[in-house]
Length: 244
Image (cartoon, rainbow, N blue to C red; front, side, top):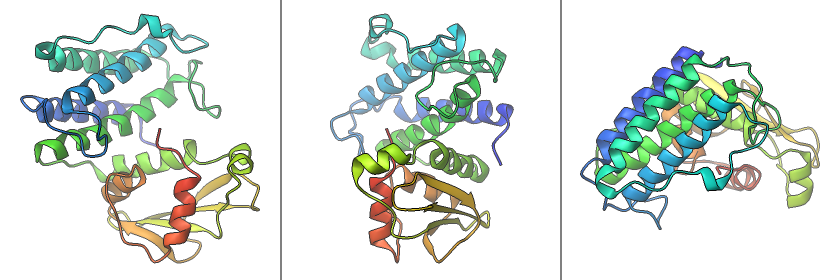
């Protein structure tokens, strides 16, 4: 079940706050899964992400904002404060917006502000994990938030039919992900080797990857490893999905 708008906004606010706490006084640390970045670069990245989607939600354009409009990077001493202001503004803009209002998004299947609100949850939660990991700090996510992030990924980031043909790849059989703390599973499959990847709730075969909802969210975004008895099928899934 998709999170409510209020739940999404709460999650964005909570994980943005946790992100700020984790990066403060730790800007020189390396970011494990973005090896060319230090934490200051991570802060700048999420600040830019928030500016980009806040601008779209506020202005409702039919195309993304021009790169020339992107704000200059703040001085290092102001990076965290600028991030915090931008995160609060994002939550405010999304909270006041009509979630059904049409806007440009990168996902052809959903061109409305509701897409932005839902997608920014995983953006904040995963980068909060990056920041906490760099600081050696604790990180938690509500199971229902993590589960929705998994479903959002499966809805928006799997290969469509054109991608499948272009990549020349396919799934050799259904791939089942199971959240052990919620007793919830998702099955990814193809109708035929040239069809789009689709997901459905429930189990259609042996689970390929199991873990808590938080584990699965981090696994699906390449932050942690989880054991699997189907490594070849997992590799196929990875090749037919995008974490960009």
